[in-house]
Picture 1 (cartoon, each protein chain N blue to C red):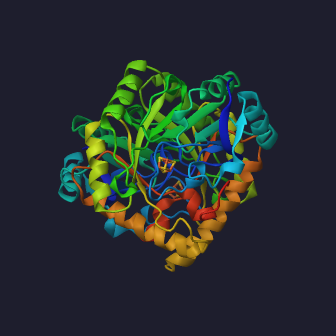
Picture 2: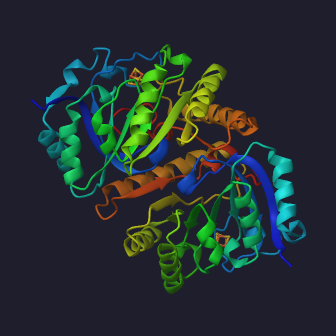
Length: 242
Length: 242
Ligand code: SF4
Ligand code: SF4
């Protein structure tokens, strides 16, 4: 039994965040999360509201859906959630994608290890700051980062922290300084993830982005960092599945 | 005599474009260009209007200016132009930055080789599309990319093409397919590089960005590409030196 719970499959579109920002990619969103962040923009993956969207799928079914949507026009697949790291069985999909020469990007908050992490081309660990209401298990995160370092793969790992306020920013710095050798991304939090007024949203997000840039630029303890927005919200607002 | 003509030194700020988008960085802008692109947003570096801003500077003077502006708070310096590849003497600055453990990003259109290319950490080659009015010397570009491949450095190279229209897009594809192993970035052109109405500018740029994304997503001949905006124009509009 190699099925995984899939919420949506869409694309091709661009990756709007993090280390592969701008990348042409297909998306597979898995269901289920061990967290319940206050500002989660994918709460439908775990709060029950998306239950009827969820489908248990074999790797081959997922691949068929990807190729029927994207044809011959993609070489990158992003697996997101929820927390895809809850799913041991994702190894079947990952093997299948690899055997078709597809690069894989995946994001997880870093609460749980899976051996298939070592096969991900672009792995983003995004521990959650205080405003999420969650508490980071730093022992789990240490273990994950150790395993990745020892794995000696050609894979790229990065850390990404979403920042809503000063407390989040201090948390982000703590994470950056705990793992100084891992490429580090600060991302502006979206406080208005329900509004459908896109131009107002962009204007608010840009203000917040400028705030985060200014804070980081003045901070001598944050040097080798990247500060990024969520590009897709600039274009598609809070719409899902684009 | 190890001086180079410098137009402006500023930062810390973020890199708004390309392979290190979002990176906290200082900027050194050199004077002079062998091109004269129709839509150049740094025409003051070569059209005579910025003459009184230009200062012949030794590497040490540039370093002093960088540290007086950025203190201990930076680990990355971006060298831009004009075309910094015209300046053999930049080797002195590059050596000095390296000896201070500073990472270096540099962008050039790829019309001219310099041996110090091999010391750049993040090198962006940005050949200019038809709308610029320039004609690419593909032999020069071939030679540069060969030299970089043979150099076997740990350095990262990427190609970036700015796209204003369909013809530019076809040119971009030609470049991508000529050098398929080099990471490839499509960037939205800014047609309004004089306006100071920032919100209008952002709205126009987002429309153009969506156009370029849609075009690329539907194109099966463009798979492993990244499509990016110029982030700094979203925040600071067409303002200089930020
Ligand atoms: S970890 Fe991610 S998917 Fe899970 S609740 Fe938090 S934001 Fe939502
Ligand atoms: S190559 Fe760059 S600096 Fe030179 S004219 Fe063209 S856009 Fe301007």
